[in-house]
Image 1: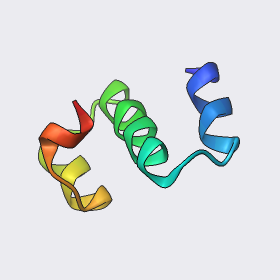
Image 2 (image 1 turned 90 degrees about the vertical axis):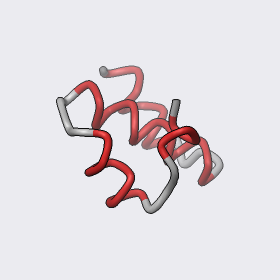
Image 3 (image 1 turned 45 degrees about the vertical axis):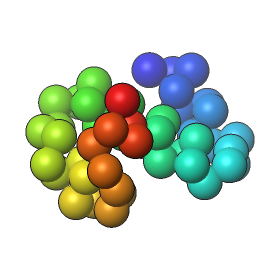
Image 4 (image 1 turned 180 degrees about the vertical axis):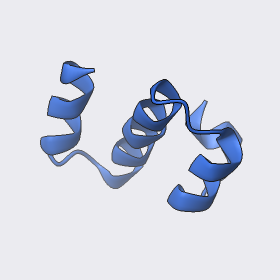
Length: 47
């Protein structure tokens, strides 16, 4: 989780940032529909 946090803070490409945030939210137990709503994307994009 610390490695993911460091990556997010490193200011990556916006697409990679969304993917990293989706991973972090998944690890924290957020449901898929909530991740899609917050990040405004399609589920397949984050898989």
